Image 1 (spheres, helix red, strand yellow):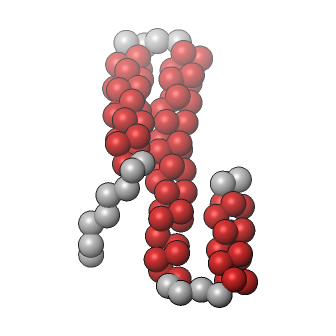
Image 2 (cartoon, one colour):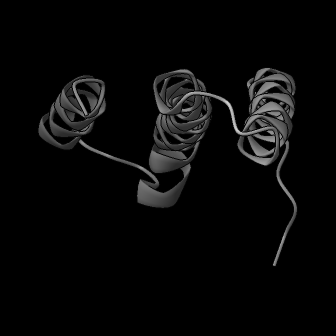
Image 3 (cartoon, helix red, strand yellow):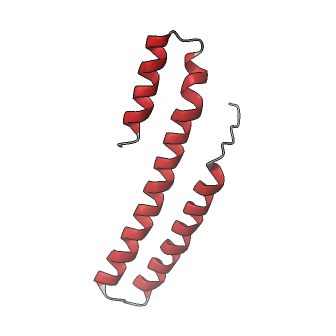
Length: 91
């Protein structure tokens, strides 16, 4: 399998490192017996950071790899591919 690096990868790594830091904090909060509401808020932050990293990765893949995978396209196919890219942003 070929390794691909895209412009968004540094941003994804930053988001994942942030999530890792939040997760470490949450683990410590649980060990320290902190209030459940505080723990839930931090877990939500971890979840959102990971979700955003995944979304960025998938949308980047669609933007940069779909055209390559489809190869030469006629106007109708190009329009459908662009429509797919646009609607995927709503995920």
